[in-house]
Length: 204
Image 1 (cartoon, rainbow, N blue to C red):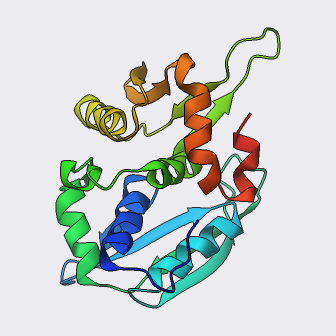
Image 2 (cartoon, rainbow, N blue to C red):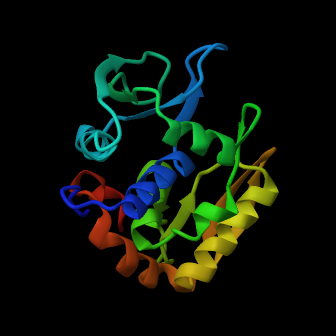
């Protein structure tokens, strides 16, 4: 991942939009708030620290560590960051959200590159290999909050930008993306330079 010392506005928007497309969220503090703030969490502190260093280019960022008994992480610490309110996040809210529903905005898909895909993979991705056979590992982007239409937009954005073919899959009422098997090696070559060491376990 690149540093933020000489970050230009376009790069900053790329990172923030990737964080929002991933597992982050932008919210109004209350009904009287004029601007939004951003929130993200992870069990991987190095990843949260990296996000924090970028978001601090916009506002001060608060950090806290909690134990969430409701998670399936065997009560591992959950590292949480939240920003101050800022027009940048309000703009993201207006582009990505319809009321309380978060979708995909085609405008920000133009910023999608290998690093953005790596962020989506670190946020919501998984890689599984069936040890009973020599099958290609199965890569998924578990963006199950997205509608079919938004999942298709993301799939098309990845295809247009990086030439990787994902399929829109469904589990009950939720949609997610599954990488075409023959694109696995190309996917790894593209994203691995941007994967933080704490997520190396996701690359098989």
